[in-house]
Amino acid sequence: MRSMPVPMLPLLETRPGPLPAQATARAAWAMLRIGAAAALAGPTVLLGRALFFLLVMLVLSSFWGLVGAERVSGLVGELPPHGLMCYVGVTEWITLSVPAVHLRLEDDLRRGGIEAQLLRPVSPLLMRLAEAAGGMGVRLAVLGATGAVALQFTQAPAWSLGTWAALGVLGLLGAMLGLLFHALVGLSSFWLRSNLPAYLMMQKACFLFGGLLAPITLYPAWLAGPALWSPFAAHLYWPASLTLLPQGSVAGVLGPALLAQGIWVVLLGAAVAGLWRAGLRRVLREGT
Amino acid sequence: MPLVIDAQDLHKHYPLPLPRPRGQGLAAWLFPKPHRLEAVKGLSLRIEAGERVAVIGPNGAGKSTTLKMLTGILEPSSGTALVHGLVPWHDRRALARRIGVVFGQRSQLWSELPVRDSFALWRQLYDIDAAEFSARLGRLVERFALAPVLQQPAGRLSLGQRMRCELVASLLHGPATLFLDEPTIGLDITAKATLRDLIKAHARDEGQTVVLTSHDTRDVELVCERVVVINHGRIVIDQPVEQLRRQYIGRKLVTLQSVQPTLSLALPGLKMRSTEPHRSVFEVDTRQVPVEQVIAEALKQGGIEDVTIEDPPMEEVIHEIYAGTHAAVA
Image (cartoon, rainbow over all chains, first blue to last red; front, side, top):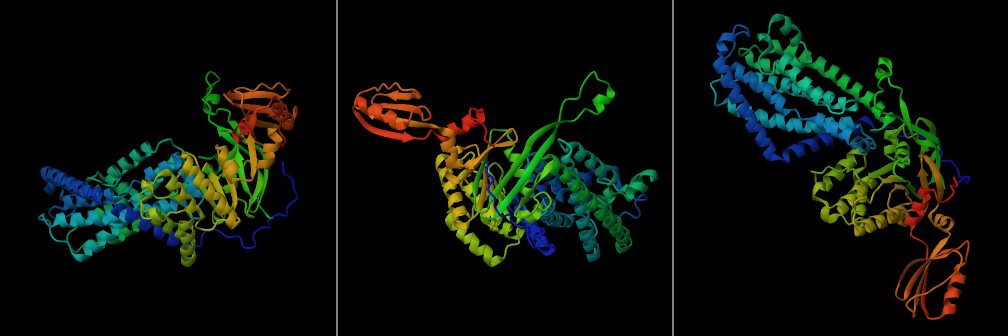
């Protein structure tokens, strides 16, 4: 074995840390653009998604027509015409826009791709989320435009510019929450062989507590109260609830909706970061 | 030359998942005794700047674990290491800017994106100055002959083309040390030869340190000048490749072309490896009989037209080391 005396390489005078914050932000932005480009590179997939969105809206508007929206109008305030159809349209707009980042994370962790990613100077999680956010932005735009066009062919009253703007902001925040939910599910792969059970639980919770198909205010009071302030409602109900309001009363909802979404973005973001750190510690200690 | 890698007494053990014991009570079932697998046992390794070192060993020997610890993606159970003056598992992201890594079985490129876009993203990931990036990319594209594939998505490239792209991606930030994990796996002979030449030429020209793991002994012979053999988590051999040959071979292959169809030589330490009409290959144990004596004996019989003396293939040497037929010298 070699044992020649050789000079030691001294510790670096300036230990280069990870990338500076600005460079990290530039890298994340570049990754976001990559995600958007990848989504735009599959126009047929986007078209299929838009058609599926229309089909869902068509089916659900028929459903609510059959059930009789006028019967529930007292429970959800002064329900505008086609309000429930628009409500479901918004929840589906958000749901269909959120990419399946949990599958990418599962793949990274199960197949060991995480090792190559850890050898870069930027957080692999940040890169995955930025990439997913890029794709999500494209889907939000395409499905949003699809919904807006479809709305013109119904007898729903035209929305004010304020309603559209509020819907854009709350919809984007709702989609971000969806992305964080999916990230949490994906990160469970650090410990679970498959994240499918976690995904199904998340999906059902969105259905139940998020008001995916029907406004939470239709629920019994004991369920509606807690559900309203759950992260699932911040994900779906709050943005969609704008469609249940009479024209001109959006401002009253915007405050609590933004508050709920803001709080949950911070909390879920912290949960994602915490779970990532815990999982990473495990991988660095035990390998993949 | 200064040291770029200095690892001392590295140990790594993994918890081993075992089936839960039955018939030993609920407590034993709920909290089974953890077993552990010792992958690396007291490994010390020093590599100087500019060296090209092959780390080889049979499957499960601990070479991948060693490579992971040196690149910072695995913490050792005990021991110390400095790579470019940094503790890899504490300064992983900082170290990432000083090293390049290629995994032969994992792609770093975005399969759906043109290769050029993946490279452009690399510039952002490593915060490379635009002018420096452009100049470096130009040089690498020329050296690795990648111009025709830059616009193609990585997913549509042949494996050989893709590996050249992977190598370029890992070199774009100008790493001082390159870690290569099975870089030629799955490639055809021509692509392997091309890749080996490129790795060696680039490392030599740039004074780059290379740490390579491979099961292909030709990678070891043609790229590296030093070989570290790991077995059962320990270094069993650490020598220049040529010295390994000389020290561990102790044998030569002597091929004799003769006028007569067969040759018959009877000497101690000499055995016939193969024979065909007018061509005989003998294996000579040089510790028992010098090669000159074998040739002299053959010349005595007359009719010798040609003589070739060769070392046995590296593959045989490595195989014998793994099989433990030679004494360890660690």
